[in-house]
Length: 135
Image (tube, rainbow, N blue to C red; front, side):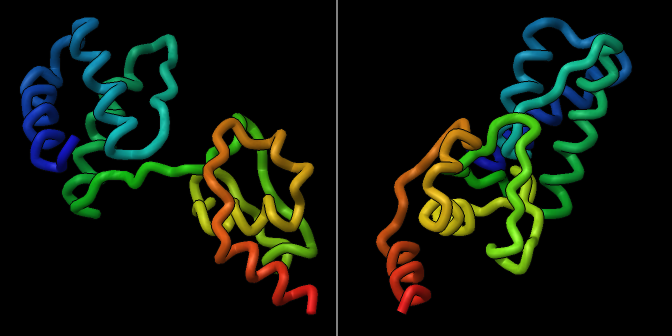
């Protein structure tokens, strides 16, 4: 989905903002949220999450002017990566975890692959960093 397609869908949803969203609208919002924000929409029982999502999508598209990039590495729900021996003890979640950092982490700690729900290819560039550090 392109940014222009997302804006077109969003405009239609914003026109119906004051009314309850239909099942088709809710499906469109979930899909749009995933494409623009890069994460799944957490649906709550009050249904305000769909209206909130429309606002967040609009803000993201207008302020950042871009869609989310598809991540090759994704942590399981509730998992946080941190180690005093990795990036000075920095804390990583899905919100700030890049593919490069995830690959580097898994090369250093291969047994932690179980913390990921999606694992991309470990790049040779990251493997070279590990070999360089070992020397």
